[in-house]
Amino acid sequence: MFSNTLGLFIFLGIINSILASKATFKNENCTFKRDVFSSFNVHILNKNKIDVDMIIVRTLTVGLKAHMSFEARMSPTKAYQSVLDHDMDYCSLLKDSQNGIYGRIVVTMTKLGNFSRSCPVRPGYYYMHGWQLNQDSLPSYLYLKEYRVTGSFYYGKRSKRMENQLAECSMEMTLI
Image (cartoon, rainbow, N blue to C red; front, side):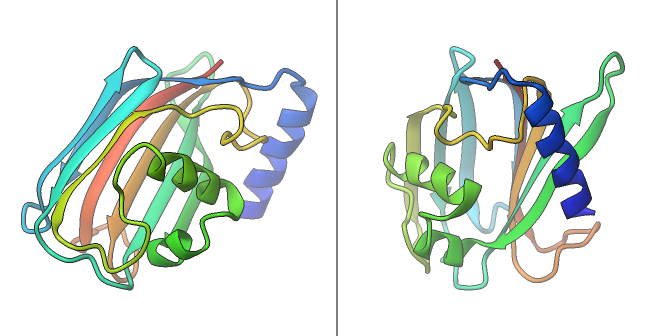
């Protein structure tokens, strides 16, 4: 399913020759496990910048996984359709952050805060202030549209029940 959906959006991106130059954000919502984080806050500033502040109270070890999903709003309805749904080994991503769409995003995030650049991630205060999603880090197959973006951290195998989920944040994003 991933390759079919990705192929469709690459095709649509080619048809739509106007590339997004930036993103605007709204409606952030985060949940987290209190035995892992004593706080986990995401704030949108001026619709185009994001601040993250978190306090980790338990070491995050090798095996930590991340899940990212992008869902496009289908006009004229308010329904969303999955565009990209991807699980990754977060610790491996930190080691090899120069590759792929997520690697480019991680590199820009680590420049604006003190996020750990390797695993294990020790307890402490972590932040990122003033981050923007710009044209250099935007996947080229995402075209001008409204999206819901969700990211989560977990251990083990991803399932619908997600008892092993440590944190999840979602927000709406518009590419302009």
